[in-house]
Amino acid sequence: MKKFTSVEQYIQNFPEWEEKLRLLQRIMLDNAHVTETLKWNIPVYTVNGKNVLGIGTFKTHVAIWFFHGALLNDEANVLVNAQEGKTQAMRHWKFAAADEIPVDLVKNYVNEAVQNQLKDKTVAFKSSQTVEIPAVLASALSENDKLKAAFEALSNYKQKEYIEHIASAKRDVTKQNRLDKSIPMILAGKGLNDKYR
Image (tube, rainbow, N blue to C red; front, side):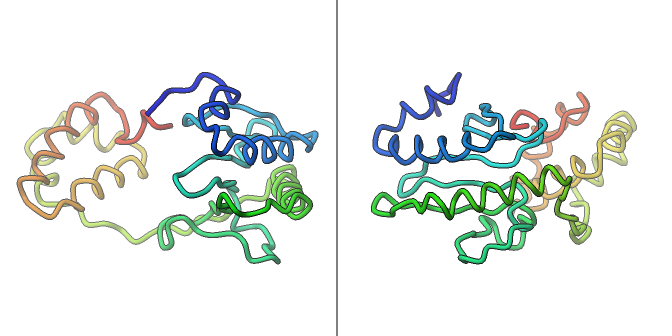
């Protein structure tokens, strides 16, 4: 994947979507509270330093992400949960090549998202079910005090990331390989997905 250094470079890299991206960018920047930045290699729009919106391209569409989209009224019923059952707050709105972007409606959604952030409204996350520690990880933690201490020093969500990553492997060999690759990161106090944050 190409690494972008600016929003402008990102937009120029997708000539087939440039017109739609520039229109979405203008809509975002029309709101006086919004600041444009580049995070996770995509254009992200913040309010008081908090992520509120993002835009991006895919093979068949461009999309707007609403980081706390679950709070929006969505009267037009256009928002989709990208990972039903996993994603609690984020919603996105897709536009295919042939779709006309309804500027006024998009502005209404953007303004509502911005107002929610200005009022410090956030989605109250429901804690997900506890995941059982895979035997291979439990065994490694019980045999290595240094590893156990490092794992326990991680935040709950970082522990859960490792547990789910190892537990989701179907084969025991894969579980062991995932554990072996995770141990140096755990000992370094890093989360599984820190490089993406």
